Every structure is written in C-alpha cells, then in structure tokens.
Length: 418
Image (cartoon, rainbow, N blue to C red; front, side, top):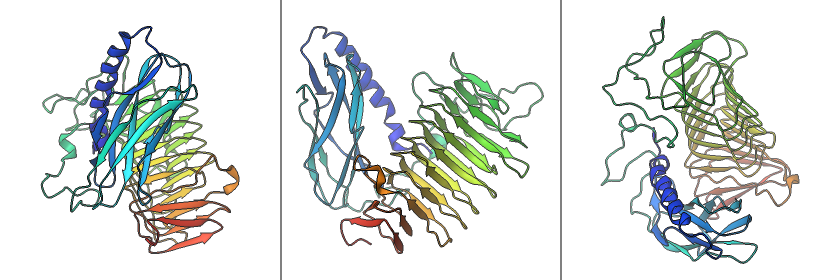
C-alpha cells in the first residue's frame, strides 16, 4: 500500500530541484535561511497531521541548524523531522516535515523557524491546522473521499530508482524459472540489477519473481543500498535458523514492497543507521519478524508483522530514535513490539498479543541521560509494560486498557486518557 507520505515525495523532490536552481543563481549572496513556501496547511492522513516544506540554505557556514516550533498547544504534539540539520556549508535545500497530533475538533496556527549558531535565521513558516470534522480512524476514508486502492497506486520511487511498469507489460523470466504469474517485471534503469535468486545484493536491486529457499536469502553489505521486491515474496520452505533479509553494517539502506514468509528472522538489521522498511509484510510461524540491533534512526512505514510465537518487532541495543508510522504488529505468545532503546516515536500504529508481557514491552533504562527523550507517541495502542528504571513513556491521544509500570513511568497527553 502506498502511504500518503510517499505520494507527496514527488512534490518534495520538485521543491528541492526548484530550490537548487534558485540557489545556483545566488552566488555571493549574504548568508540566509528561507522556506520555499512561507505558508501552508496541514493535511490529515487518518492518524495525524503533516505539512511539508524545504529549508533553503544560501551562503550559510557549516554547522548545526535547529528547527523551532511556536504556537503548539499543550495538548498537541508537534514534531519537526528533522529537528536539526547538520549543514555541510554548501548551498542546498533540505526537506522538512512537521508532524502534528491534535484532537480532531481543534484548530490552530503554528510558526516554524530555523536558525544556526552564527545568528542566521529564517522567517516563519506558518502552518494552518484545521482538522476535518468527523475524521475517521486510520485506514478509513472520510465521507467525501473514496477509498484508496493500493493495487492501482505503485510506490513512488526516488528519481534514480525504477518505477513499476504499466499493467500491459510482460514478465521477463530468466532461463529455467517460471517466476510469478501476473507480476510484471519493473523497468530497470541504468545502475540497477535484476534479482532472481537469493544471495548478496548489488547496491540497487529489484526482485523480478517470487523466491523460495531452504536457507538464508538476501544479504546487504553496502551503504545506500535499495532492495525493491516489487510485491514479490521470499519464502522459507524448511524449519531452522535462517533470515530473509540481513543488513550487516550498511547504513541508509531502503527495503520496500517485500513479503517475507516463515524465516526465523524476517528482516535483521545490524549496525545499520538511518535505514528504512516500507510497504512490507513479514509473517512467520517460528521466529522473529523485524529485529534492529544497534541501528539508530530506523523508519518503519506501512509495515505488517504477524509473528505468533515470538516478538513481532524488536528494537534494541542502542537503536535510538526509531520511527514507526502505520505499523501493525501482532503476536500470540510474545510482545508485538519490544523496545529497549530510547527515543522511539509511534504514530497511527496498532499492536496486539495474548501474552502477559503486553503488546508493547518497553525496557528502556533512564541512564542514557536527558539527551534522549524516552517517548512513545501512539494514536492506537493496547496494553503496555513500562520497564526500565527512570524511563518515561508518553502516550498521546490513546487509550490503554491495561498498563504496568515496572520501574518506568507512563504519562498521558492529554492527561487522563489512560
């Protein structure tokens, strides 16, 4: 399924291109930070509100640029992504998204600004928030909208990656393989590699048929790698220790449009910073779904993890600042989501289990200090365990029928929603 966030990507890319053209004409200009658009409205996506813009840096020295939000009411949650930018000193445009969780019947105006340590600052990016009346829960359209049909909306890809083909294209098959009937081969641009079988992947790879294996499947070892399964499945046919996709020490990796079935480890990320998993389903009767180990800034978007007998999603070992958007995770005998790294943000997601340990099990210690905000932001959550001495779990616009504090503290925004 294509998220609305993905659907906005061409606009963001267009803004960056236009901004880049403007920057090229401003050589010798005084240092400045400016927004491509000074005003915009926030869009409702069924679980939260968002607004997109580009911050243009011209002749600004290298250093940190911070993003500040003014006018956010106490009962709202307003987050800038990114909250700060490590500017390299070159003229460029940075995409910035504002995420807002607010009561559906409220409205307001926010002002976003940017500044650096030398005193260079931007004007205000003014955002008008007008939540629609009668907004529906995630996955349901408004009364005046039609339901999106994911099958008719191929995922939006960056400019240097392949797009799914038209429906009338034929499936190209390697010799001796029948492939996946009804799933056309993506058009492969220069620099991308077609993948027909398990193995170590090239930097940019597109799967062109379903795969079955009795061992491990894909390994990713290069930074900035992309694996697009194009909706094809990767299935384990034999019980035992195995993984579907393993990312080993490769940062900025993107995995998308995959269906991973019956591995003891569906997707495993080790020391893989700033990676993402999008529009992917992981199912297994014996093993874990998605495991992030020492992989900070992981982003999961439109992910389903159905793992009956173990943890569906594990984020551990200093995998700080993970972001989960529209994630559905379920287990029968384990936690749907197990976290022992701080800074996680969860939006529009749901978790379920029959296990006593809770659908969401936080074991976050407070010893990391104030630089890490141990926050869980969720618009749909079930029972939760707050473990870890000193941790603070913030639950926003949610109802938790049951939660247990085992050293950690649960806080609600607005207060009293527990």
